[in-house]
Amino acid sequence: MKEKDILRLKALYEKLQNYIDHPWILRHRPFHVVGNVYFVGNNYVSSFLIDGGKDGLLLIDCAFQETAYLLFDSIRALGFDPANIRRLFLSHGHVDHCGAARLVQEYSGCEVFLGERDHFFFTERPDLILFEKHVPRFPIHHFYEYDKPIVWGNTSITPVLTPGHTPGTTSFLIHTPYRGDSVTCAMHGGIGINGLSREELTENRLPLTLQQEFLNSLERMKKEKVEVILASHAHQYNMLERAARDDGTGAAFLDDGTGWSCMMEKHIALVKELMEE
Image: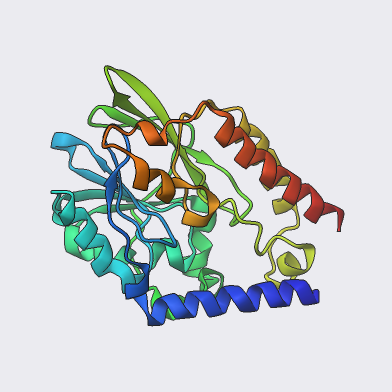
């Protein structure tokens, strides 16, 4: 691998190790976003809760095993009971998104969903999970049926296959009620380019075609009209800053659509640059 890739990976591993060793530094207050969507994540990686009323709670990503207590604290602080989680949607198979899956599943009895193309992380290649010893084995009940809306209460969630960051990275388009109408929220399941250089893909025995697949999926997602960006990592968008100034109506999270397209454009450029190396 190139020296810059080695240094980037070293920095990533050191950061993740620090979060695993000191999970309390990641605490962030939970907040209502819009409609039935709530933020219950931390200041590094996001988790989103969808209230389905009689259907129960649906959780998107669960962060680290070590931050599970923060996740449960956040859910309770919003007036919900984590025991009522009925479904856990995982965006992909990395430690910071699925680490707490076993704890959440054991506690709530929920069904766990994953993109099928990431399944081999948990059967053949646990090294790709990163810090796999911190991810207790958990049941995977369902693979996503892509581009088919899932109705959850009066909210619908459409999983979209967006390979690149991992082969089975899954993004979500969420339509939820807002002020007598509905609003479209979106979370890209893994927009980072780490691990996608030719050298890294070869080192990890992953297909080089992931670069083109990532580019294609970004181009596709760019076309979606998204009014509320749900960032899977706090540093990818100013969601936490918007939360600080929101007046409780959710208006601070609304966007004219350019925010989403700009985010996609930025990463399209990064992937193209990577492919030219």
